[in-house]
Length: 431
Image (cartoon, rainbow, N blue to C red):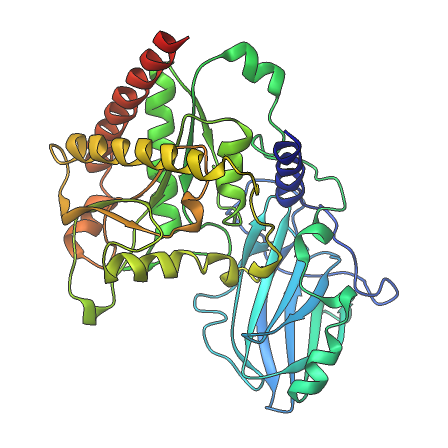
């Protein structure tokens, strides 16, 4: 029971974010400039309109133009070498391709929403470097306000010595110190409402989000495709009224991998369905069709292993330190619980395959398994569904088609209903 309470606290902390993050040096902070961004229809979010790099392999400067004052926190991470800058939620309205090309100490940088109320910029470095200076300049003389980050080359020894405890990449607790303006509904479930509801909980997990785009092809991003699919599945299930449906994300927000199954565990969910749309390197051929994955210690094939490895790196993309994640409950009963849960997961996967194959194209080997971190809730049946490959032209045409999505969502809803109806009947007869 204590472990469940601790996990609720961890989940709440992980998903909480600050409308104002801890500042680097309040005496230096001022204001910022730019153009309004139409992506989020919420007033007063700072907007970033331009970003640029200057300098060389010894000293490199990053400049971000903003339209209002922001606070920030910058830290360095090792293996691989990165710099992570956390700011309040920002509307990034940067030119297409911004961050793709590096300069000096920076190989590339990426940016995006990392949680509601908080954005992040992650710099991939060419080698060890320290943050020599970081500050915000006020708008003056017709120039916008700017966030400036100055990096300086150092050797490995100096870099490691700079990672004092207060500078280590434990970002989430720091971000979570301030109370957010709005917290996601899944962060602190209303347990009284849940008990009164009584319906089985289905958690839908659209993969990636925020700073993590997932795979991209022909101008389409995986994070957007799977969010649209997840929302359509939620609407279909809610229309039936038999289940309480919870999304791990219902907007363009990054959710850390370990926090996704925690949503299901905290709600004592009856089922967890993670939605993805992968891409294969050209050397691996042109795979197509939907694939359903369950958890296993050993991957069913090399393709499943590659996909699991890629998905399990999502936190690194957003700058999180994977080593900081706590282990799950160390209970003598956990192994038995996991075995039973995997049995139910495999049962649902087979049922889902049976429903989907009559309406959508399936992969030639539609049932696979691998060690996906997002499927590791020991007491919630879980599957990861690759609804198609964005790297395949035919699949991509389906993924952007509302008609195809409606048929696929319908078959998935049918499988969920069949699975949970049988489970509820079995549970009822055993009482």
